[in-house]
Length: 468
Image (cartoon, rainbow, N blue to C red; front, side):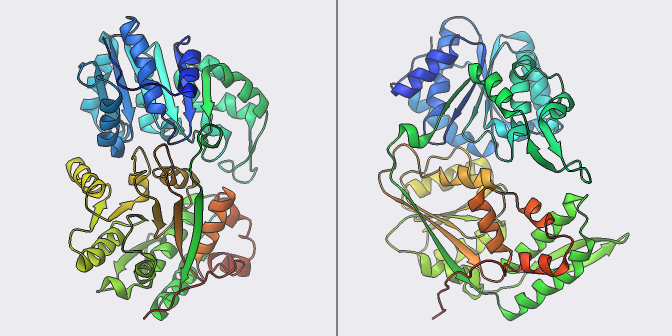
């Protein structure tokens, strides 16, 4: 008998009322609205009613400790011994774990929960195929997500196919695409538009409970602020060198060439010196971090002047080296004030870092992809994006770590942007929820337009603070 420890909010009761009548369903609830608590209530209904014997909860590996704490806050599900948890990423690599879970779903009546289901939106990814194999053995299934669509409505196909192919009515992605996806004739991998969206909305509506944060919660506002900096002279030269070396290698039919180009430029902006080498006439890059003292890096120096020493901050970075440099600088000023959180750390280390930040530490310096899922950090109101990528989905997820139930102060979000660089275009694309690569492809026929794009020459410069 599963016992819950907290009460449902009215909108959570609505979700339970709707989905408890179904064997499969989707909770598309904005981050911070309590979808974990809602899922627990549905689990309790099925377990206590004898519909299932146990629960398999698949989740992003990075949220494991926080998710466990959340489940313990609301119920005795973990103590009951009826819950199995597994990182979604593990199912891409561990044969042993796949076999263990397959044995579980074949020998018990299992309620399958897929948390942050947008991670399985690619039907051809190995983890998606392995999870689908498990799902076929489970009658009761639930997907959870705050941002189920991060690119376009095609993201929905595999999430609902996992629940039951009959929901959308297509047995394969190809049949789905034939009716809904408009592709570029020259580059079939590029999706231009999604058609017949009314049909998709109508088909998923009976199986979905959706709620938006702004409709149900009275949260404090989010205040956005941008601060700019300029590269050192060697960085400007290296930036131009990368443009000259890699721009001619770009092939719009091979998206990886565009991302290689962007990634190299972003590395320069963040303090890495890039050298382009060739193997079998194909380019590859070597990155070497080039600042001995953290404050010599203009990006980190810019960060320093944005910090109010009486406040806590979450600082998101793209690179582990950036995380290490920022933490070093902050801990030199005040030992123990900064903790690191990234994918190369063990789970126990990340748990200890999170506990320290909840306690006395002032700065949580994290990789955005690692720190954007599942963490409850609403005791902090300041978020700084040291460096950026073009994934709007993880950006929204990361902002919601602080802008959620329990936040009682205005949230201040600061972007540190490099003037005269790709940073400005990334910022514009995130604001418009647009795809950076698709925007860049529009400029491919004109070399001068391409250079203006990656140098942000069509964007307004961001005010910068001079070094002291």
